[in-house]
Length: 588
Image (cartoon, rainbow, N blue to C red; front, top):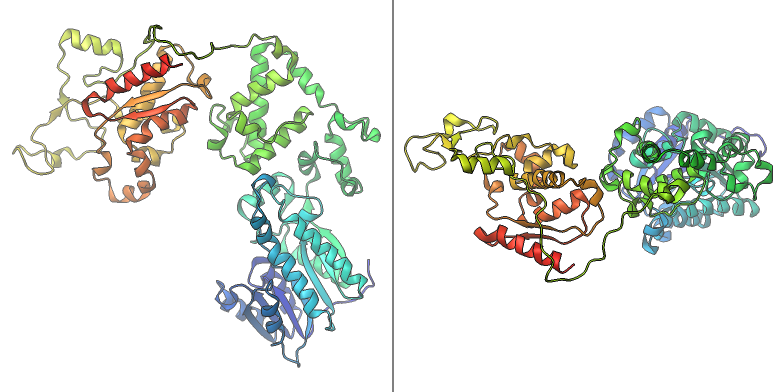
């Protein structure tokens, strides 16, 4: 701790990022303390949303003079010109550097430009402020650093180095006899960069947003004690330890009693060689041995439950029951950051390293669970693997149709029912169905040829075509409404064909299974939709009514990796599609 003082603002206080969430909070605190002058700086300055209201609020709170200016603080000439405007009667006496940019992402997604973008304002601005105010009589030079540079944070690989540099700059200024205080903050509540998905991710790791008033109180204490560097954050160490069970040792954390307790309780057994003092750490290998001792069906269920439980935590669901085991991780909402979170969680639970590409290599919870079972449970190795014959080209192998599915008017919804309809000579023409939302009275006109009207009340219609279950196929109701009924029918019929063949469709995910679809005459998009509905589904009309998407949608939904071909040769489309499918089979 530095020498005790009661720091209060005087003269003009400069706040960078002054129209941002943290800058506004700092400015309000300074105004309540009676700052004679406030100079709030941001890229947009007075054009920032709510800038005029902020100026009025700060004046009402007690600031005598408030100026909001536009300036790129990373541009030294711009900043120098701005500082030259500070009046002599209210000289610059303090600097609060809160400006920052966050472009979070895992290391593999970073580029030099993306790194430079983040460092430019935080580091470039800090260095310019340091150089241009070195000769002034400042009472405070406050740098808003982040715990991303102190203890790390998921997705902040390009944010951490700039904050570490701010901490180092504060030390350097002290060595030069200049005032400096760098506070490595955790996230603040009520706005700022830790809102939305970033904040949710931090909270899943036990890093809780701080009440701004509490944070400002800590800032005042740091100024009163004239501290150089400190970290202020609100952490649930038991949750936070999840992220570090497989990470390298961090002496900084081991020096904190609460952190050491939580980390020790969760550190895997393979750390014992590096940390003999932690010999009493629970062996996470016990979990693997317990799973391996189960019979195969219970073993599969246990691994799947393990994966779903960790997915639920990462995605902030209430429990594993909210995680559909056959949905792809991408459809469940995973991105590169959450993929790494899941890998870290599973690594900690199982006590061994796992690749960062885990959810991309094994794209559903079921597939991933089976991979972990085979890799980690010794008993799984005794289970005979299912092997498929190597593909080979041939011209004499008979092609066999193993299953069919269909929809025809007259209630013929299976091949058997269709055959019976033909054998019995059933009349499949019926009255207009009442499950389409049609205004039947308005559509009918007994006079033939009236535009937009029909002169008959009968036709060949499919039963229950409106009963499509979009959630079953991972499709939103809004997208389903925009889809040509042919696409919806294809999904249903393909699934039925697999079932009639005795094949679980989910077992083919990742296989070289092809889809050949014959189709023509896509006119669904040309039909008028309810105006309110049309606006809601507009974004899905293109893919929902494009013939080329039809086969690809089937491959995507089932995770098939063979050829996906849509054929439109008018009336011969089905025959040509079948011909191409046969060729593909014979070609291996």
